[in-house]
Amino acid sequence: MSETKTLYTADVHVTGGREGAAKSSDGRLDLKLSTPGGPGTGTNPEQLFAAGWSACFQGAMAIAAKSKGVTLPADLAIDAQVELRMGDDGFSLAAGLNVHVPGIDPDLARQLIETAHRTCPYSKAIKGNIDAVVALA
Image (cartoon, rainbow, N blue to C red; front, side, top):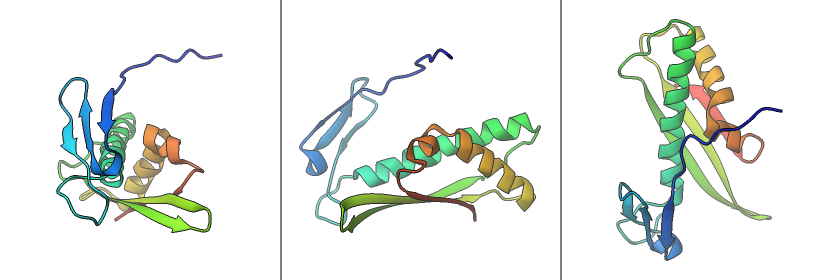
C-alpha cells in the first residue's frame, strides 16, 4: 500500500454562495462571486474551475514534456470551457480543454496531451464524473 503525502492544502472561506465572496486564508484569493450570466461583477465557480484545471493541465504537460526531453513553447495556451447544465436529474457540469501547442509536431503534442490528461489531478478528479473532452486545437 502506498503512502500519500499532502503537498498543499487550499483553505478558502466562502459566504453567500454564488452571489457572495471567497477569500483564502493566505489572502491571495479575495473575490466576489456572481451567478453565471446574472448581474454582478464577480466570477463564478465554473470560471474558477476552468482556470484551475487549465493551469494544472499545463503543469502536467510540462512534466510530460520534460520526461520526453521536449521543451514546450512559451506561447502554449489552453482555452477551457466549463458548462453548467440542467437535465432530468438536475444540475451537472461538462468541460473541455482546447490545447494550443504551436511549433510542436501534432502527433507529439497529442501524446503530451494524453499523458497530461492521465496525470493531471483535475483530470483524474473528473474522470467518469462529468463529460470532459481534451483536444489539440
